[in-house]
Image (tube, rainbow, N blue to C red; front, side, top):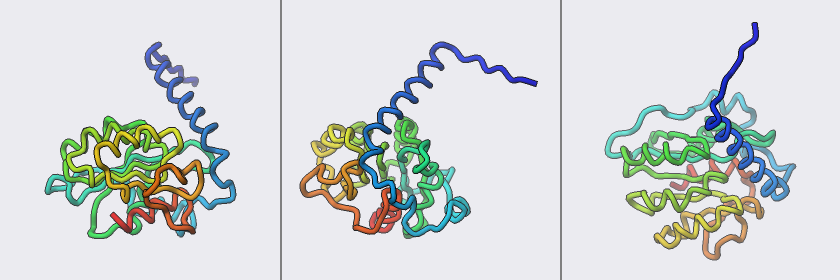
Length: 208
C-alpha cells in the first residue's frame, strides 16, 4: 500500500528554505573542519552516547537555576551527531545533577519560550546554533548565563550583537579551526587542544 503525503505551498517553502540553508552551511564549513577529526572526544561509540542521559523533558524549579538549555549544531551530515547525542556530551561533565534541554539549531523560538519559564537557566549556543546569538542575548535575563561555543563563520555578526550587550569574552569559546571560530574574536576563550568539534560540548559541560 502506498502512502501519499500532501503538503501545502507554505509547508513546502519552509522545507525548501531549511534544506537550502543547511546546504549553504555545508559549503561554508565542510572545508574548514578536519575530516580526520573524531566525532567524539572520549565516548567510544554511538551506543555509549545513546545509552547515556538524553534531553531532559521537564523544566527545573528555582526559575531554571539548575537547568541548561542547548541550541545544537548540525545533525544531517555523515560527520554530525543527532541532538540527543550532543546533549549527552554536554551532560557528561556537568556537575550538580543539572538537567539539559536540547533544541535543534532552527528552534531558537522554542528555546526562548523555555527560557521565559526558566529565566535563570544557562544557555549554550553551539556551532550552527550560534547564528542566533544576538537574538538570544536580547531576551536573556543575565547575559553572563549565555555561552557561545565553537561558532561557525557566518555567526560573527550575530555574536557581535551579544558583545554589545556585554557578554563576557570568556563565555565565547572558539574552536581550533576556522570553521569552528578560530581567531574570530581577540580575547575570547579557546577550546583546549585534544577536543574535537563535538567533543567541545564535553569541555563546556565541565566549566559552566
